[in-house]
Length: 149
Image (cartoon, rainbow, N blue to C red; front, side):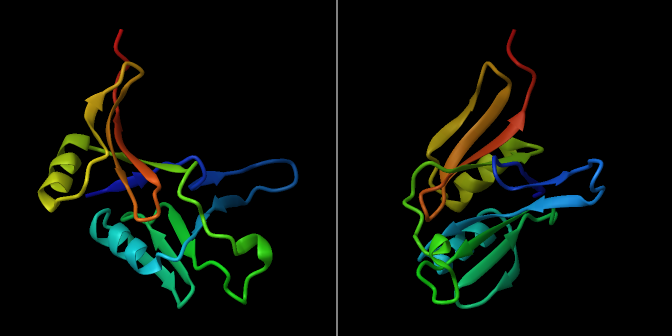
């Protein structure tokens, strides 16, 4: 299953200006006590791989390694105060674009993954369903389709 993680805050972009022609890579992070549950969910349900981990930090990548997301244990003494407060479970979502959303939906149902929003078509051109990770983050699994006219 090939997933392309397209999220509001996790993506890899090319950035060019008069001052730089290098690429810029953005990695979003979530501060959570649930590192073990998070690793299990993302690796077993979404087939993410582990790029790096230690006792307080987990860096995961999409199956094709095109994007990453990180998770950090709260209140770790190595981190400054702005990186210590845990995520409260609200106000963040991820969108994962897949080639065949119906196939992924069936795979998730067969695995017993809890579906938060059943598969459906939207008039703006999405066919999608949604699940929730152990931290309360909604994950929209989508195949973009032509908008309904």
